[in-house]
Length: 494
Ligand code: BES
Ligand code: MN
Ligand code: ZN
Image (cartoon, rainbow, N blue to C red; front, side, top):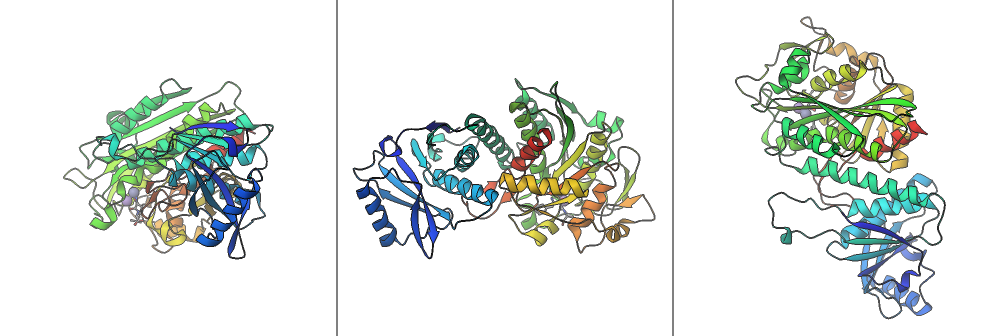
C-alpha cells in the first residue's frame, strides 16, 4: 500500500513528482486556498493558469501544470475543493474527495505532496484517508504486474504545526483505508475464485496475527445447527455454504456489537433465474460480508473498547437439480418457517439464520449489511445506501455515516407492509408487496432480530461502481459500509 507521512516543512521545498494544492470554486472561477507558502511569482503563475485553462475549482477537478523554479516538485496539481460548505462533515468529505482525486489522477508516480487547507487533526485525517482511498488499484490475480498502473508510491501531507491527536487520526485513516481496500479486493475477485469455502479461508488468513478469532461452520454443522436459510440457499451449488463467526473481545469492552454480512458469492437468482444482464454484477453480492470481515479486523487494529462479533453468511445461489424450489418451506434457525416463493430473494434467508445466531448472544446492538434489493437502487440510486431498523439505531448509523463521509439515508419500516409477507403455508413468505420492496425486505429481517436494538443497511447500489471512477471511488467494488461501521464502533466505544 501507499506509504503516508506528515511533514511540517515548507511544501515548496519538498522534492516530489507533484505538489498538490487546493482551489476553491467561487463565482464560476477558482481561487487558491491554503497555499500561502507559494512565492509571489509562483502564486501569479498559478492564477494565470487558472484563468487560461478555465479551472473552476469543482470538487475533484484536477489540473496539472509544470511547477517552475519556485517549487521543488516537478508538477503542480491543482485540485478542486468545491464551494465553501458550512457543516464540518461536508467540509471533511470535500477534503477526502480532493485528496483522493489527486492520488487517483497521479497514479504511477513515486511521490506526491499534499498541501491542502486543513484545520486540526481531524482534517488531516480526512486528507490522509482520502489520499489512501484514491490510491487503490485492484491487484488482479494472474496479471503481469507491469501492465497495471501502480498506485502513488508515497504521500506526504503538509500538516503545518503538530496538532493534538494527529497521530491517532493518521492511524485511524490508515487502518480504515486498509479495511476498505481489502473489502474492495474481495468484491472484485471473480466468483470462480471466491466461493463460500475460499471466502472462509481468506477470512482465516486475514485474521492471522490479529486479535480476532474465527470459527467456521461447514455445511454439515449448518444442517445440524438448524440453519435452514443458509443450507437452503446453498444447496443448489456444488460449492457448499459456510457461516463464519469472527470475534474481537477486548478485556475492557464497554459494549457488545454484532455485525452480520450477506455473503452470496454469486447470485444467479437460483431457479428464479435472473436475466443475464442482471447477473453481470452479482459477484458483488457478498459485499456486506466483506465489509463486516474487514470492519472487525479494523476494530481490533484500533483496539476499540467494544466487543465485536462478525457473522459472514456465505452461500452461492445457483440453479441445479439440488436447488431449492419456489414454494419450498424451510426452517430458519430458531424455528420460524419460511415459504421460499422466489429463490432470488435469497439474501434475507441467509441473513435470517445469521441474525438469529448473532442474537442468541444478546449483543447490545445488532447491525446487518447487505446488497439486499434492487428496490434500494430504485429508491436511492447507486451512490446512496439505506438504513432501516429501530429508531435510535437507525439515527446512530445515519449520523456515523455522515461523519465518515458515506451516504446512508434513513428509511421507514411501515408496519402495514408486513401483512404482504403472510402465507397460509408457513410463518412468513420470503417475498411480499413489490412496491417498497426494500422496506418489505427490512420487515422480513426484523422478524429475526428478537426485538434487539438493530440497524439494517442495504447497499445494493453503492457496493459496486458500474460507472467510471470518481474522486476516491474506483470502478468495481467500493468498500461501501466499512467507514460507517468503523465510525459507529468508535462512537459506541466513546
Ligand atoms: N442480490 C440481489 C439484489 C441486488 C440487485 C443487489 C441489484 C445489487 C444489484 C437480491 O438477492 C435480489 O435478487 N433481490 C430481488 C428480490 C426480489 C425477488 C423480491 C430483487 O431485488 O429483485
Ligand atoms: Mn437474489
Ligand atoms: Zn442477492
